[in-house]
Image (cartoon, rainbow, N blue to C red; front, side, top):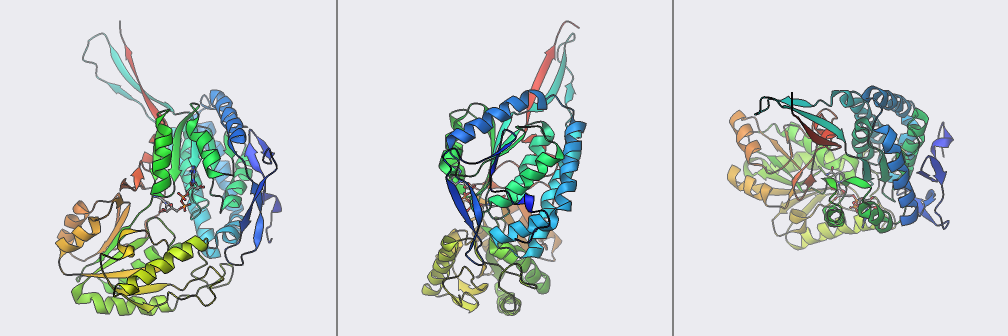
Length: 483
Ligand code: NAD
């Protein structure tokens, strides 16, 4: 493995300030989706190790909550510096276990670090309120306090950013965390843990466990000491965890699945719209929650748009993320490939045409060429489910009302995109779209300065911006009398 600092490759878990193996010695293999070789192993921990991590976090909370925001901000600043110094090594681990092109992995590390820097400052701006009292001799003061121990469960598609987006605000607020990263991409998370330890966070503030999702997840959601769960992943697992948290009434932040509409109106700049689809649909091989999943194109520009898009998609370079110029890496696992194939087969069986891509040169690999499908209709699987792969299905529509109705005809509500040069339409359509985020003439909007999150079955709560830290704070009201 080509790392400048090989100590970042950690095959153990961080529990109570110690690097440990699973109690029973069991491990999980982590493979490289490009080569299918084993990158390394991580402990297969269960409820026992998780309970020890929770206990360590609870002990830490007693003192950590009393430290100043400036002190916690300084620890986060130090962590930010260490992450950026190790940007190449962290990106290397990410490309090895997740497959995304190395340049994208470097970009994700910088994006992940931006949350650490942002919340280092934001923690200092956790303001309370004084409220004019309705009673003369009383005063009302509103304080904000850290929620307590937080459980953090994250997916494989953004192995660094999904973690820092949660734990930077948690730590800034004074909350210790117990993290369970995806079993597909644990090494990036564990390396972030090594750097957090070096930055000087106290023992028990950052715990990272890998292992059986149900065992670790059950211990986290069942524990009364855990006061909050922040989860990013599928809507199916999000609903399950929500139910499990009901017994102890935990605070919840849920960043779940999406089914983003991408609407191209006939007054749009088509070149800009193609650029937008490339950014929104094909980044990370189409394995993003805010990915354009359904592309609606107005009839007058449908053929021209399809032709322009197919020309660009047909030129994309597919391969191992370490090879120069590669724009699309492998899919994460066999299940991902099977889902993409089923969506393509279903679309063609129901009358769609794959005008470019969708092929696998070697079906024993996890590489599939990026595809554009025309003639797509609402009875196809691509209309209802996240494909989570590099497939751009093009639906044709006639009127704005028709496009809006189709765009909103989904239980999801994470992201939407539309392209138009009509200002009145910009307002009208944005007000009608049922999503938490909208890109207008823009195909990507990942930034730490703006709130990120969904509505409907895409989740609860927001990450980033000043909203992100509120998720880790309780509001306490003091009514002071006899003044
Ligand atoms: P997933 O739901 O299968 O897994 C997410 C995490 O939950 C993993 O760590 C997994 O080990 C864990 N998990 C699975 N079963 C569990 C259980 N019973 N108890 C506790 N933990 C359990 O999702 P995934 O395949 O890793 O990620 C892809 C999904 O994530 C997509 O639906 C995507 O849209 C969504 N996602 C959403 C956002 C967002 O911000 N809204 C961002 C990235 C990904």
